[in-house]
Length: 212
Ligand code: 5GP
Image (cartoon, rainbow, N blue to C red; front, side):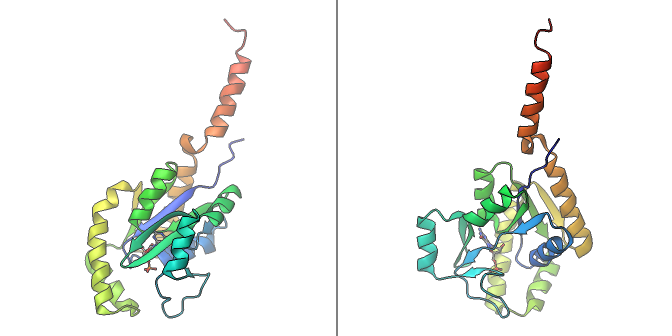
C-alpha cells in the first residue's frame, strides 16, 4: 500500500496576507494538519496567549535554546527573534501529520535546505494596496511598525521564486481548498514516497530473478 506520509510544509507570506486565518481554517476543516507554535522574543499583541500563538520569551532564553540545538530554524525579523521548536515538529511528522510552519522567508529557505522534501507555499493578498489596507485595519500596530512591515514585504517579494507555489488569498474558503489540494498533490510525489518505491522495486526484482 502507498502509505502517504505527512509532509513538512512552510506557509509564508507578507505580514497581513491572512496566513493566521488560513491556518486556523485549515486546522478546523481537516485533521491531517498540525501547527507548529514558534518561540519569539516579540511582545504579545492584545489577545495573544503564551503557548497558543507563540511561546513568548526573552532574548537570553531564546539564545540558550539556539545553543541547545532546540530549533529546526530561527531568524530575526523586524528586530525580534522567531524560531521553530524542534521536538514538536519531529513528533507530529512521525505521527503522520502535515506539519505547518508559518514562518518568514529566511526561515523558509533554511527549512528547504535542511529538508529538501518540504513544501514551500507563499501566500499573498491580491494587491499591494490590499496588503496596506489590511495592515492598517488590523489596528494592532503603530504607523511606524506598519511602515516597517511594508518595507519588509517589499524585500520579501524578491524571494518568492524560491517557493514551490504561490497562492492568492482573496477568498478564504477557496484559498484553504487550494492549499489543501497542493498538499495532497505533494504527498503523491515520488520524492516523498521513496520507501514505497524502494519496496516495490525490490519485490519486482525478486520476481524477475532467474528470468533471462
Ligand atoms: P508576527 O510578528 O507578525 O507574528 O510574525 C512576523 C513574521 O515572523 C511572520 O512572517 C511570521 O510568519 C514569522 N515567523 C513566525 N514564527 C516564525 C519562526 O519560528 N521562524 C521564522 N523564521 N519566522 C517566523
